[in-house]
Image (cartoon, rainbow, N blue to C red):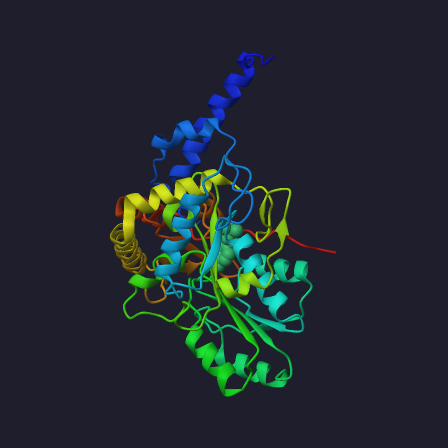
Length: 383
Ligand SMILES: Cc1ncc(COP(=O)(O)O)c(C=O)c1O
């Protein structure tokens, strides 16, 4: 029998709700969109939806949203110019799991390979490589955060006897720099490294990469073998989610049948969040390609506005071409806390997600102008 919540616990819930609402309003430093409304789907919360198994195979458990999941995968496969008869994928728990899958597939194809990734790569990649126990080499980044192609070429040259797995990033975490997949492919070709695999981590920028002018190479037609995105970032969702798109022919080489679920065990986790596929399907149906394009245009305009306003008040802010991430010198603690500005080394950033408005940027700039410029107190670290 279930009890009603005690008054004190009801009060805690109320306070938590208010606190989440308060802190959600001022967040400018993390790539999460907040302008979603999945109210129409609330009745689905009554069901134990579980997308266990391969979304493209039959499964004994029927309380699932595999059909929606397949449509989401097809949408992104098309967006990323995968071969119509050679793509596969699934909805993951987020970009980290999607990257893990790309690297797992690559390692299964080339067990003796070396992994290369730049120093601007998201921190989770190092952990994924460690979990998979693959040797790896970190490549230098250029100042804007993009991989240093010369360093990549020279490093790979020294390891030409090994297959190469390259993890490129399309939208690095701090500066939203984009590694050029076709340049990477070209270097591998010139060095005659035939056994290679390129996984593109497009967590944030992958969803709007197709709208960039000029187009930047990152997708299957440009040479990627798999691409990952985080769905809760640009699209927005109440629960973190991601997508991995791979080539079906590669997935076929690792799939194993499991009689308990009556499906193929091709995904990393067994039980999988079926609500996420539903949310994502719903958002894509509502937005479509044109809706995503409009969101990107808005974000880019707000990012340019943010840079020029910051420059006018004397802050040396900049953004990479086509990027919605505005990079600024490390901000004082007061601002970092109020606006939840992610900070690493000497830089902080503001990410102009679709839910960020010029009015919000104005409020932020007002705080920047009024702030005493004592750049953050470092905690003394004496031995
Ligand atoms: C470039 C990049 N890759 C991967 C991730 C990890 O994604 P998630 O938080 O969805 O696991 C992030 C998160 O910010 C990211 O910026």
